[in-house]
Structures are given as structure tokens and as C-alpha cells.
Image (tube, rainbow, N blue to C red; front, side):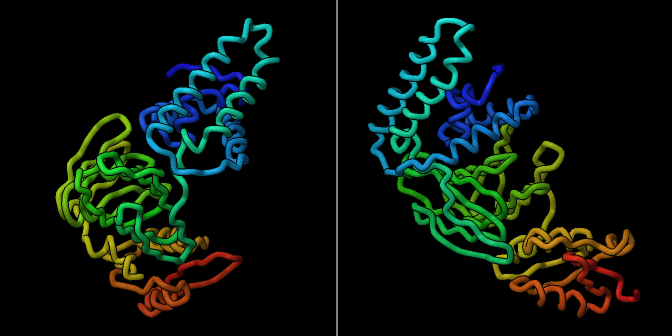
Length: 331
């Protein structure tokens, strides 16, 4: 993919960009994400285009497959014909916004056919909240604190069921008569299954999968695959998938509103508290940061969690200037 985009209007008329924004073509979206990584100087234009699309209020409607296909062909044909009508570079600047407006008018008129509610947020938990719900196929999903699960609009048996995850969630996937694939998209890899139980974490600096039951295949953006069997724990580290040893009960303790620590450093504990509750938390110094803790603590209330931490008699919790500082109890 090698394109130069002179302005925001060029992005708004680009099929790959729209596929990325509306999540209609996963392969095209990945190519676009790679392009954005390779062209950081275009980030401002991309942000402006995204803000413009988000400002549109489009009517949503569940279409029939034939309507989706017809609308897509019609829209893309109009975009191509509009592009060919621009006669020369001299007229390009004057016509760019007209072309973008034409694209977006077509988009607004036919968006509920071409982009049927894909990526629409379904479950979004706040800090300190754990919630359980069901997806359109009956799949049960439990969502950890400060996490979002969204899914594509029309789930037809025989077609892929696609979910996008930001944060952490546990899935108990329902099998379908035609064994439709269930795909969880994260920032670094896809989790591909038919029917199984697994936990996925996709946060800013950590991504991993724990398989409890069934089998899944992980697939990275560059096409590499890794098969998992029950009990496997796979972490995305240094741009690759790595199987590691991990205690299943510790990984999914959050479902029971608990945190399970096994020689966990205080540096890691403070990071977890910040993820769960959105409160800036840090060790008082390097010595405290490298101290470890083991045990199971309640995680349904921040104050109770901090009191449990102090109850170990090893640490003292200080609230100062809007942040939480963990000190050695002897200080």
C-alpha cells in the first residue's frame, strides 16, 4: 500500500480508510494500520477524518445480504466515476472537497446498507466494574474493569462472528450448527475459535490469552499462527506470540472480583490497580517496587483492596496529591 494523501478529503474517499474505520474488511484494515504506522506524519489528517466521520449521525438498520452487496457496488462505482471526472491537477484542490462531500453524501444515504453497525460498542465497563452479558449468538462474555467489547452487526450462521476487544474479557463461545468461526480482534493478534472458553487481555502494554476449554488459533497481522490447547497461556511479547507457564485460577480470578498474586512485584500490583480503578498508583521507591506479594485479595472496592494490602503488615498506603503511593511498612 503506497499512497500519498494530500488532505483529509482524500482519506474520506479512500476505500481502505473507510474499511478500517467501519471495520468492513479486516485485511484492508490491517493494511491501513500498517500504512499509518509507517507514515506517522499523516496522523493529524487521519484524526481529522475520524472526527468528521464520528460527527455524522447515521440511521442504523439491519439490512439483507443482497442489499449490502448492491449498496456496496453502487457506492464504490459512484466514487470511482466521481474520481475520473476530475480533469487535471490544476483543478484537484478545487474539486477535492466536492469529491469528499459526494462520497460522504453517498455514505450517509447508504451507510446502513454498507456498514451495518459493525464495531458498535455493546459492553463498556467503568473502572472497578465487572459485567456479564450475552452476544447475539448466545455467547456469554464477562467484561473486566475499564474494558469495551464491540461486535459486527449481522451474525448469520455460516459467517464469521467478529468481536473487537479493548481491555479484558472472558468468553464462553456458543457453537453454531454450521460451526461459524468466532473471532476476537485485539491490537496485536486475532483469536479464532468455533466453541470454547478463554480469557483475553488487550491493554496498552500487555496482551495475552488463557485457554480454559476447547481449542483456538492465534493469528498475527503478518499471518503467523499459533494453535492453543486447554491450559495454554500465550503472551504477545516483543512482536511475537510466546507460550508461558501461568496459573489459570490467577488469570481469571477477576471474574470473582478477586486478584490473585503469586510472588507478584509491587510494581505490577500498582499497574493492576491503576488499570482496574483509573487512579495513579506507584511504589514509593525502587526497593518497594521490587518487593513481592502472594495471596488472594478482594477486588470489588478500591478501599477494601488497599486495606487488604496494608493488612499484610508489609506495606503502608499513602494518598497524596490525587495519587496512591505504596511504601514499606517500616517507613
